[in-house]
Amino acid sequence: MDDHVQQPGPAPASAPGPTPPRPRRRRGRLVLIAVAGAVALALTAAVAVSAFKLRGDADRDRAARDAYQALTKPPGQERSTDKVAAGELTVTYDLCPGTGKCDVAESVTATMRWLTTQNGVRVVHPPAEMEKCGTREGCLISVTSPSLTGARIMQSGARLLLEVFVRAPQ
View 1 (spheres, rainbow, N blue to C red):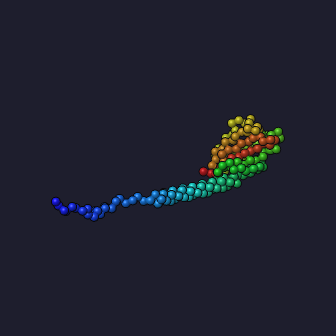
View 2: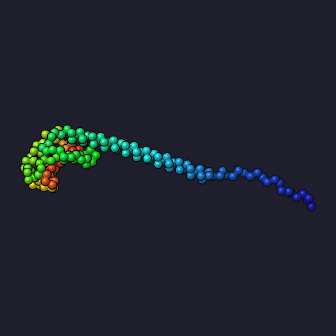
């Protein structure tokens, strides 16, 4: 018999295994940083766009106010100036103290004459429904102009008013 029994030898060296995956915490931190950067970039862009729009609105408002100030004195006393939208104003004038105390047709004629004398006005169209000029609904006078879009003559309470629609020239 063979006394020679093989004894187990030292274990073979193990081959290096695959590298372990990165810990999740580090990957999560990188994703969080990327998301925070994207949010910061989006907020910065939104602020820049808003500032640009506000500056544009302010420029249009200034241009509308300049167009309004360039108007000559209409047939009536100024009552109010209201901003309607960016670059648009409505200026209201008292034409006379009451519809019973003034000639509505003459007020319409005087207003149309005044509108034709304004700088840049190409055409003034008479009201389509003249009989509405002395009512609360009023009548519209269309204007073809870079800075005037029209006018409305209407009754408000006991007064006859003229509203002039002004916009920033395009």
